[in-house]
Length: 565
Image 1 (tube, rainbow, N blue to C red):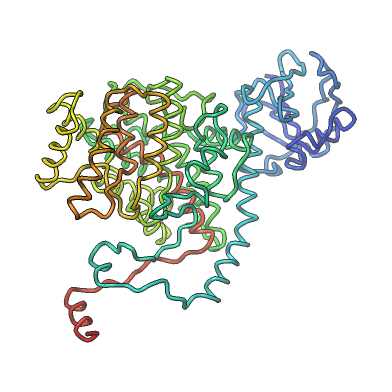
Image 2: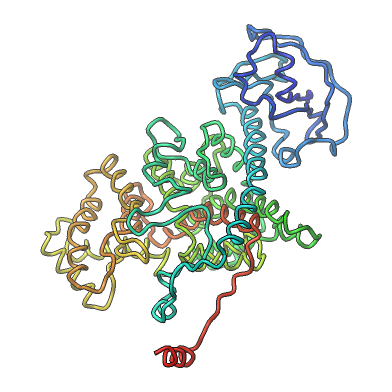
């Protein structure tokens, strides 16, 4: 095998300064050294490598730089990038601008112009840029945010945020402000805001796979971590980085296979996450000993690895249960959500767009919901992200939380079996009342915080109007939107009679063939890892303490209330 050369951007700009405008090279200043594959899997760097000039015409052949001397692996500038360089490359990026990559092919030796991340070599450099840029941004932001938190506590630590009532204590702490969660904020009337941006704003501002398409989840991950809207190249680089982290060890699949195939998909999924934990970077670093100020770095590694590997684990569960174990390998040319859909077995372009939307809008919903709060609580004990997220999944599996999206489709299917698809408004009203009088709830309606229609429902409805307006189940969901809220309002016991995110998602998935309702919560779990992982990084970066609220007994409450009367 011929040696492969990768040239650092500063050297490239210096070598080509007479031919290229450095301002057009977005990598300028990001990389400062060169490295080389001397043979399969063996890497070294060359700070003073004399470079051959690339002709400005980008001709098909040119003189290759002379082989440089060997340098020790320990001098390689980035341990994060080191693991991304794989020996399968047949070409390596030497220069990249907004529109093309210049690559050096090793056999035959020649310069070749390529377009975007279609080049594997281009993806490698995207990974380096993304990893260094995202990690570097966080590293720069963290000291400032730590100071902000210290100042907030020093200046306003004694300010009261409200009164705690007995009703709050015995009613699930509803309405009680008691948790710091940086990545998103839920307003009862507006709905969720991700780092200050509403869902429509995210759809407008975050990069998409194609113009006018749904936002890429990688873009939301960047936004949640940094508070900044990324550009398309940053998102493409992050997508490539997640792909590079996505390999799942074989023991994870064996752990899942140890369960009966009839086990609930969430049980198998959570078991797979626990099996991933043996590779926790945080656990290894903690056992070796490290200062608290550095806790965020292995947490970052664990969270990014976890997010990257979950689609493979989740799709394995799906194919194992519903498709006779016929596994579909990943497609590295696809983005995070599209690749997940592909591994599940769904390649319709509209389904890929739905999966991008689904993962994005389910990713985070502030910190008070069961799964997010569970991850924060467990993480506050310095349990690593795998342990924290596995605990969150067990909360998500509850019927009053993530399992609700399963219950919605099952309820609608039951309605169709009893009344048919051409159901009248009066029949629909009767069925809703029948459900309520039996002591059950209408799944997909109401919310613990929201007091208006969930914007996550609204954007899914807009997707359906655009892509599947004539679907009979969508039409039924639209009728329910007209019928259910007035009935719940008349009932008088529901604070929010409006639909939530679960009222719509199952019908969209069913339209494209993913109709196994018991699996829906696993999709929710993959999505929620983005928000939980981002916040866990910030929990450790900000040094948030062990969560330990005070509990009381009913006798204590009675005694306290008598004294207060």
